[in-house]
Length: 327
Image (cartoon, rainbow, N blue to C red):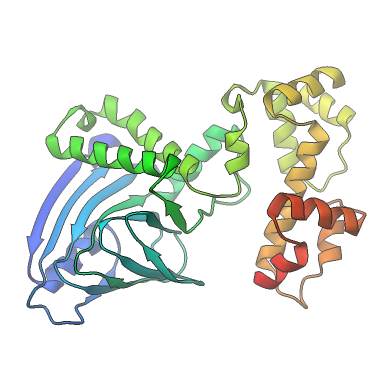
């Protein structure tokens, strides 16, 4: 459910030397937690500036000394951006990760989460993102429903390119909220919220990135969208171009031309891409002995195992058997 800007524009500035008070504020604005201060609490000084902007919660956070913080499952997407110092963290099977001023930590809604070591000199921008809002935004950008919620790559380069640009956006918006600028008005806040969600989807890695990066995505005409939705709705169906053209309500030639212009590939090449993604999802969730690569290939319409493996490796950079073992 989207959070309305009218209800969400709240800024709280908080300072305390009490660990329990610091824990309580994080629980209220972010997540249930426990804070441990390994060297004792004599130097502990929590400093929080927290702003809520619709589906986003932004916080500037520091503790004045080294701390360890345990969470359960977050229930939200979350990015921790160190402004100084280091952050050693883990979530689920992703362990011993280090966030710095060059690499942010990206957390999923699911998986137990621990900040094993927030260094004494570490201050950070914490960004909590409502999962429904992020997935809804991705659906709008793609022009179709998602089969599964997006999973973001757990580390984000914030020293270069789109990651650096997104962090600059976050810092600028947070400064404007603190200053009580125009961003605090609903008319301005709504498009800024969408821009921040879109920026994250363009800055991080995930399975939909290639599709987002294709030109003219937002301008896809109705026939292309209808054909795409049909393929995503029944990826295992043995579609022909003629059948897709009937579903799209145009001639075969027009459908092929529209796909070349707006998708950058033929309809059947797109269908192959959809099926490869489905096979990748199944192999990622499976375990050797219970899941068989050839059965997965056949289930998603690949009759020749060698060609399937070759296309799969070209698409995902590894063989199907490697995905199954790592899953």
